[in-house]
Image (cartoon, rainbow, N blue to C red):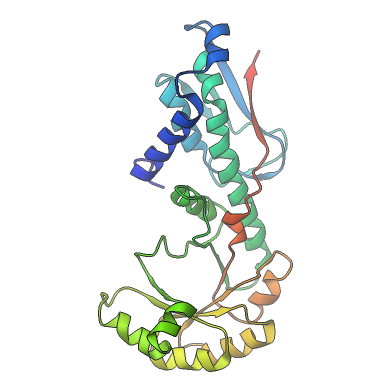
Length: 279
């Protein structure tokens, strides 16, 4: 993750503006300007930590001189009670930045933890877990970073960096072959072309059209297995639709190369983390 990414910097500024606006009324009336303290980030359930540098950036916005001690790094397993980081700085800054810093850290750690669970289900298989574009608007760069920290693989970043021909495109183009011809004429040869299929006949048509990746969308396991056999050694394959922690291993057993999981980022369960002032 490039911490100088303008999207990240804008997102942090927006989050702070949303919470602070004219100032932290409670803290500014109770805490003196020059008082300094230490605060510990405490993990309250087992999970994969992600977003420590982003949390640091948030606090640094309030107190550029705040100092950090990292006991963990992104990607490390944290157990209940672990303290991945301690920060020392102005008391006002710590209190005013606490919720925004935790919002980023908890969300990113939740994504990394869920991704890790899915990845572990595929041990012994070569299939990789992919994320999707089902992210909170504005958070995609951080959501996708957290997926990588959890051991997953990023799919396309957006609509601009890869062709993905879906059912509505196919319908208007008059078929898979026509759609592929239309895009191939107007893109650089290095850009990958993926096509969504829902039947075996569509899989065969996509193969004949010479795409790079074929998605098996909402197929049952038997259909995916047949489709994967047809595609083996010819094109990369991706399973998509209704994937859960309960069925992901069975899907991997069909032989697909990738399984995309929208749940990683559209149904985030934040990792329980708090920040406590050290007495």
